[in-house]
Image (cartoon, rainbow, N blue to C red; front, side, top):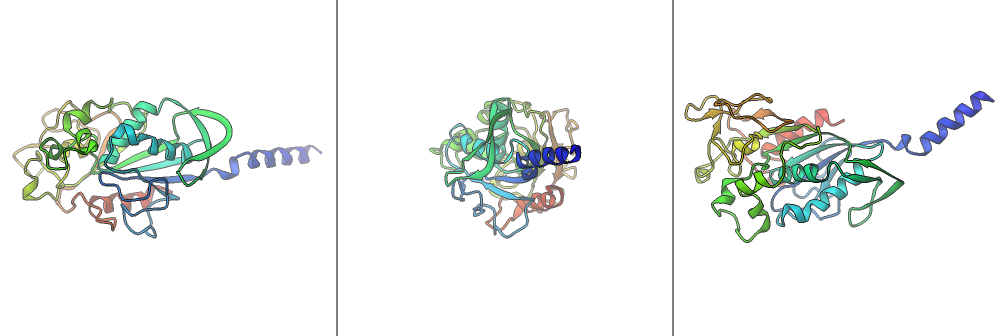
Length: 291
């Protein structure tokens, strides 16, 4: 009888959620968007949906043009869906998606979140699992491809459509003052900095990938951008790997680590609908680590 009771208890535990525990890989797009909002299987922004991109991959689509504050709810819906209860998430961002994720964690990562059932409806919202709540989300790490958490000088200079709310958010001084970038809820942001810039991106300081400079893609702290380069460039301070202070003494935000610096200047900013550029470098890393 005792063995039967133990077996029944184990069956109850499994039926109440242990058996459904899963890991998910969330991909958060940057400026311009492209995928259908609420459809976590639409990878239009990134590339073919058949491409490997981490366990149980989901596209967290937001419009890529409205303000960070107004679109953060889309990301919170996804985090609630897949990163609560017994489920855990790996998160990947591109460009302004880094600003979006940083903002969402800093402002909402300490709030009470109802545990969800990982079964989204047509609007991307999931139902409650058991009615209980938790603080924040279950996130293993964030990997940022060409992260724009520090803004871009292209926005400062009006190189993009200045009436677009997101462009206003991407001004360097605005992006850096939008939230406390050191507040990540102990989640590590692993930064991938690309350096295949072009002549027209000369307004971007130091090394850049045509859209965002190393000061942002490398998670360099401070109220404004600066000029950072690869070690082969003698004319500006080196962006260091890991969490170490950069040449010249500037530091990185807490829980930000540079894991890839494009010393060969081989990768640009753009996925080009085919997992291209720096996104391809991150995708390869995610395939090997988001399991």
